[in-house]
Length: 355
Image (cartoon, rainbow, N blue to C red; front, side, top):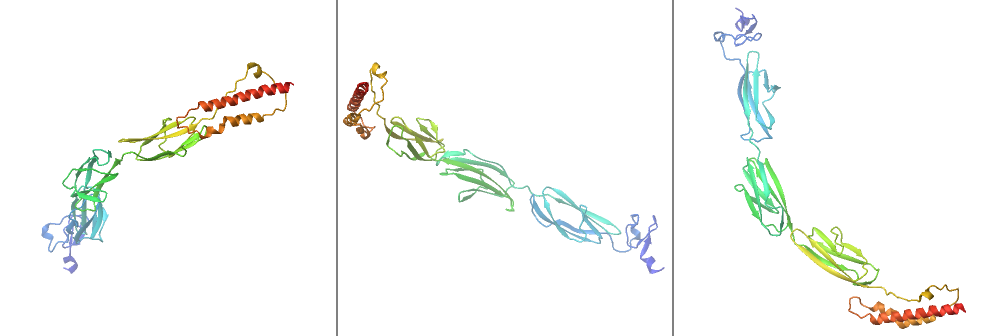
């Protein structure tokens, strides 16, 4: 018997020659009886198939390692990894990996279950109030799961709340609270934030007019500076001027302007008065007959009118302070005197022109 015959054996089913140590026919996969095996196994052997990390979470990248002997082809979930001994995979959910190894004589397989830990989760995070007055107490509450550690951050503070589910505080200004919960691997965490608005009392820093008193038909500019107000109303107009810081008015008489500023917790008012000097009105009465006369063109000496106006001291009107309690009887009398002079002028002019 030659040496080649000693190293081979024939499959009784398909009559194909196979290595003497083969357990299966390379052609038809016939399984040889144990009695035909005279040496060590040539079957593929999967010695290890494992995850390198002890703990991992959803979304983690994990390392899969394996060691296989006597294999010509190695596949993991239908991916050829024959030339490798490890690879990385992102685990988004529980899954199963199957490694298979085969050669000309046999094949083997093994499965590995990947079960990542759930990520930290904040199921609720709330505040008893979202808008408060300064130093009013609020209560924060939360519910979290799948976490190893939790902290609450606000301003420059950070407190451990791993074993708490609420927190009380009295903020004195607008503030943001941030709840953070971590997994054992603190690369994995979840956070949520709540803003709390702290309302301060309304403050009118100033409200003023650029003139204390004016002549009738003149204009005045009202200006103001208000803090912490949600609305600003100007009376007597009842006009919303929240977006303005000045307003022009033209009062016809002495007027008091009221600025009202308010928010949800307070209200403040300020008042400014503007005095108005009304323009003088001269009532000149003529007899019906004279009023219907059509005067011819003529030259009339009106010098006496100016002297009458001088006597009435009409310029004294400009020195009257409208806010004072003054008597206007004398002034009214002088205006009447001016009116009488004017009537006299018309009568005189009529007769002069008639002649």
